[in-house]
Image (cartoon, rainbow, N blue to C red):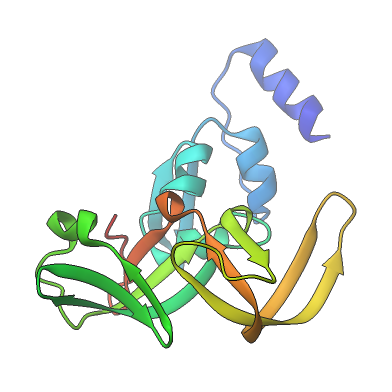
Length: 173
């Protein structure tokens, strides 16, 4: 039905306003999506931008299935080096310091989409931390893995992480 609706919209060449609570439907049909929460506009953007560059934690967690992974962390600067830290996990973000300067000691949330998370038995090069597989959900074309900190190594594409100011919920990068 989504394909038929999109075909009709494109063939008619008219602007269409479509209201739905199904974020997958909105992303599939729209050239521009307005995300609301409690009557307030959170973001208006192209579907790709909502997915890759959400402006706040709500949009980041709402758009995508499965949703974005969130890790509470702290930002610190020591001896000219900037790091994001969460327990044993430490990620050098010195190259991002011009965008994050002045946040020393701030509580942040690191967000990473599931497709940019990598699991392995051996510690990879770069930022990584240990997790324990709790639940496997095979869905045919993909496998959803629920983890807690512990046994397997988790790493991710560091160019794809997002950082959010935890108290304000706003994207920093």
